[in-house]
Amino acid sequence: MFQNSLVTHQNRIVQAFSFSAEERYDYFQQKYPQLEQFVPLKYIASYLGITPEFLSKIRRKRVEK
Image (cartoon, rainbow, N blue to C red):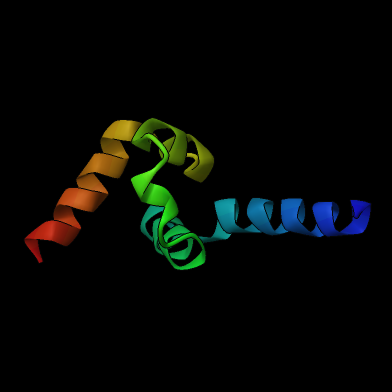
């Protein structure tokens, strides 16, 4: 269980440094497709390492497409 936790933590660190905020949001939506309906956006933004305002900008840009 510790090894799985360590690998998951390391993957999150790699994503934080190598993916853009939009790519991290895409990955989050793919991995947890229904979670966004139940969790406040400020917590999702915190999980992604961005501000809630920037998450709103990303989401607004997707709606406009």
